[in-house]
Length: 111
Image (cartoon, rainbow, N blue to C red; front, side, top):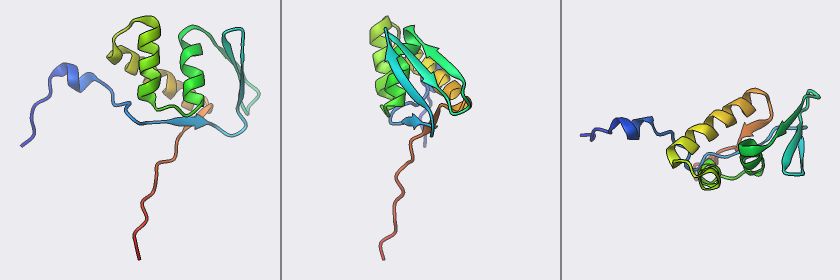
């Protein structure tokens, strides 16, 4: 029998070990506290503030839990809020073709 989860637990996103990586042909540089990102389409993005904290960690393949923890520490926000914000930002990055999910390990059957 499953236990009931409180509303607060159910609303908390699962970011534990999810990781992302740069999409092909996307490059970035850190300049004066900003991340300058060039997409394969030629679109240019700049991330400063919280985006400047999150982007290099996500682009570097850090687990989203670590990214959310860094954001929560930097801005003194609740971990659950940081997790929601990181997930929202990563979904936008993925939608713009800047990052892709890190491939999960495939288990092979033994012969």
